Length: 274
Image (tube, rainbow, N blue to C red):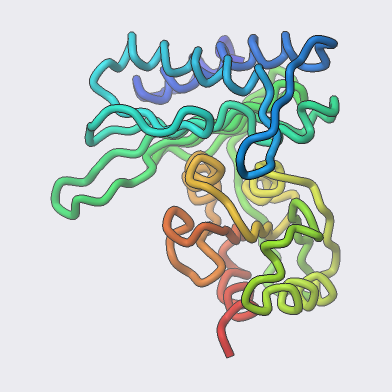
């Protein structure tokens, strides 16, 4: 993929993030389907494999060498360093799929940079690499969102669907218990019934299909920072929106709606408090 990507103008940070994704892809694909893959259960009862840990360790080592002053936040080993620049990593988003041999998983890499005037961190770039699907998405602020697949690189653009009744909606799990909080279950079910089509594509993939224009909206009731950071610039640079269910930043809201933008007000209205 990098051989094709180098034909495009990319920033040093984005080039580095794509290099990190190459390294992660090599490791995760080597362990995907391995008979000796070790899987443990974390305190939150979600699975973690030796590939999750090894991939995050690999990326942390590379960041420590190439960007020694930067901080890192990752799913498996938490936060380290104190800097206005922070790399946010999910070594394998979709571990449940990974350990069962389902190809819907990806490495997520984002860079957050603090704005001195506001002391807030903005996600400046995101890379989502799904080697088992043969697809990689990326974006940096102001430079558009892109997809590399089958040896081709194409710029991404969201759909033009403007009515929820005509919308194709993606999500991860219908029976996610987080949908049962604050009456979200009835709101979620009502949305799925109103939409033209709904499918549980899973994890990062639904949001990337929003960026591609393949579907029109995607929803997640509970997410961590590393689940979302890389998705935000890709969806937004493709012309869409990504917020929490209540309209706040997903970084503080802990859940997400991505859409083509045209549907976003109506989607937020579904989950608005009465």
